[in-house]
Image 1: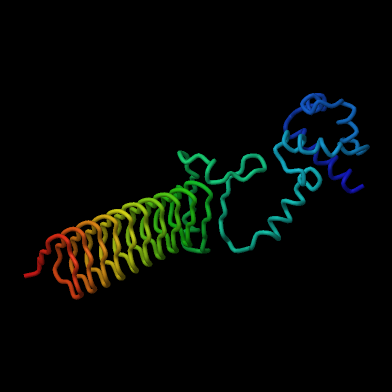
Image 2 (image 1 turned 30 degrees about the vertical axis):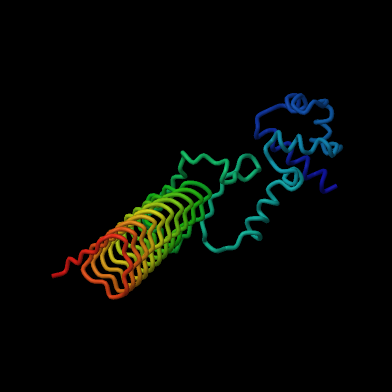
Length: 271
């Protein structure tokens, strides 16, 4: 009897929410009005073959027809951890939109109130392009692009990253345009940033400040000091290099403390 009552309450609520009559629902499902009336009075349940059509018509799951908001509440309280992460996932009806289907031309716009820019720490996991107005006190993970102010944690993005300073590392499938990066940087696009606290691996050109680790580039490198080795398929223009160098282009720098393999010319700028 519990299923009867749950289904009755849910179907009434869904029909009223949609703003349709029993006649309209019956016509849409190609059944009699009397059948719908029996559902809503608790006299009977629909045939099992009707359940997918009913769920599709209202844009809900079959489970929702029998559990309604109860299942949603259980998911919120039990299935998801109470970890203060702001999760934004896109759905079409009751189906989660995967990376192949959501609109890459649109952004999810979020504004962080000033009082939440420091405490509590807010982390963001976003299924789409993230356009965040304000500073992020935690990390950002995005299946699209990331645009925001300073980020205290790390950034993982399947698109480009445009932001202020990043306290942690950056992993990005697009280009990076930001301030200082506290950790390492891995990018499949070009890099334009401040100092990097770890290593830099980039499939394109690198333009940055000092690099505290090694640097590997599929293009050219223009930076300050590099504290470790360098591998570059283009030209290198920097200050001091503490490690060894492998370069397919020209090198212009002040000093190199390690071994050098260079297919182009080497110019030392320090007098």
